[in-house]
Image (cartoon, rainbow, N blue to C red; front, side):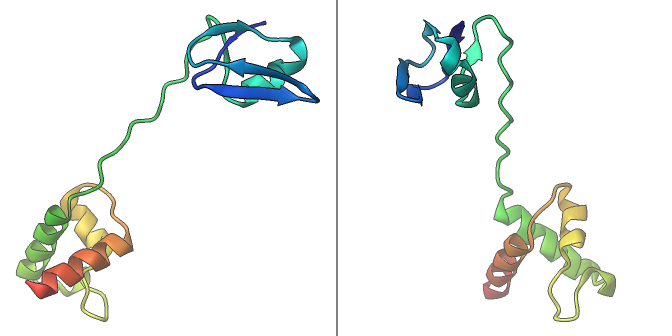
Length: 113
């Protein structure tokens, strides 16, 4: 079967091996086809799977701005018992999700300023 690999790799099974070069069509023994496909190789002519988009990490300055707005609005529902802004409240302003760790990091920076 004619396969193509996305990367330079060795495909081996039970002592039989083939060196696959990135983007080069190669005839692969039937005994190695399943192993090669599990390693990311595809049949020649098969549609290529779309890679997922890389999403940029949120900018901490945006998070800092959102925190400043929450403090300005002074709604107690936007803050936890310890006084930190709630992640959901920050996300509502930003329009995208952040983690608690990102919130904590931004909060530490905010308090230093």
